[in-house]
Length: 165
Length: 154
Image (cartoon, rainbow over all chains, first blue to last red; front, side, top):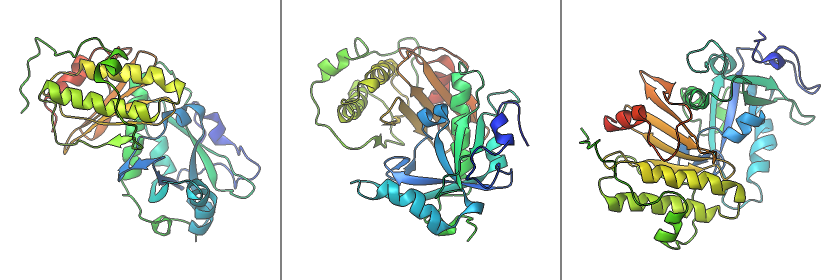
């Protein structure tokens, strides 16, 4: 499963994780206005987070909708005026990993486990460490990533995402 | 189909933060997305309107000095847009990026500026986003492939 551009995918990264992310796993991206969506529009995935390798996603085979709500939605929306849950997107890990950097055979994104003590399904999505000067290739990959997430439609609630429970 | 005059790309004076002075103060706004799908920049007034929208975004995030170069690039890019192109949505992540996005029935284009004087851009073709042909393109110029794409935008 490990790819040369993403060696961290091949081994468990966090002791709190259930293991490396399998290609068949559904990955959920939660929409909170105005952080990741605005006025019903899904924003492009945050470039700064993709560069840092810290864009948070959820491995929904390893948690329930209620756990994801408690771990993600509540902290992001509670106590902050103007923020609201707007639904969620999901795509399988292999769909994300299949996105290429331009016309190359290099994967544009790495998807690695980053389980937390109280949220073992947490994972990180990142640009692969390919040539950063290929700015337009990365722009295309990011747009294709959003399109991949949108293929299953915007889920109005976490309950309609393929969570384990 | 959009009619183009490629021989003279309209400009709105010097690009960059000088435009802020030209436009004058605009009240801050909390929004970071402005939706204008389906309309076109058909006059200098429309371009000024787009500049006003970018100016509003900048006002809303002016407390973040890291964004200043991003908005400098964004203003330059607006100043380079020719008349006749569709009006884009504009948003910022509030951290390091300003994005112009055209979403049509068939077509979709994204331009991103990060404050380093280089455009990143992509266009959808045959169901996939493809990289823009011109790497290291400055924000003061609309790359030829993007210009052509926007001219036939649906």
